[in-house]
Length: 260
Image 1 (cartoon, rainbow, N blue to C red):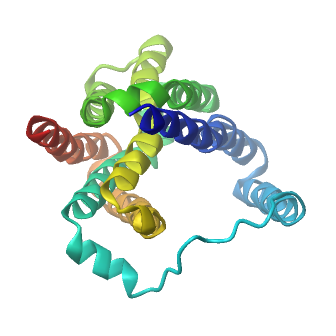
Image 2: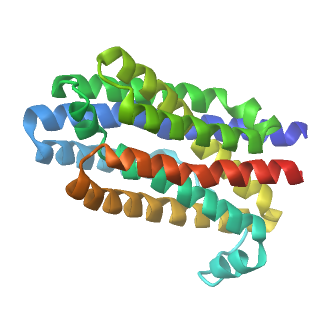
């Protein structure tokens, strides 16, 4: 039990890198795009990606895999392991629900009366809340994984719902984004821990690879579907869809907690 809690803390610190990127990257990209255009933001991303590739090549030591993962092992694990299938459902609902709404957070904030010049600062507030939640989540996830999954679902869904009808000024927008961001900051360490607990020791790499696949597919699905919704009925509507998609996360987590 002590070892699982220690691993949860390590995973939380590792996920802090992604949360830190959210803190700086999204508002910085928005700021660059607002002042210099979207091409400048993509150019900055290219430069940073090349710098990251160079740093990995020069600084990261070789880490040989403990197991050989073939493409066929991915569907095999899904068929055999019910907990992994449940994890894939959690990833789908959380990530699709988040990105169907968060992709359009700038027009959502502006539709709620916030000036475009305020958006990058508000995104920084969201990212800071996510970073703090990620770093602080280690011991919480180690002791109460299923409760944490239920809590993040409630926090994110509530944040989206409040953004839809209760935000009309800078203070309320910041407060709601803190709630939503803190919920999202728990996602990566909590979901990764679920997969690592679900898989046998020799299959952890396969399980986490499945999580990565589903995570990226869900980003694409949420953003793509959200675009159609925004075009058809305006930016606020994606908030309600995102909140509804978070409901199964709470149900799954509470049922798993009850069975445990």
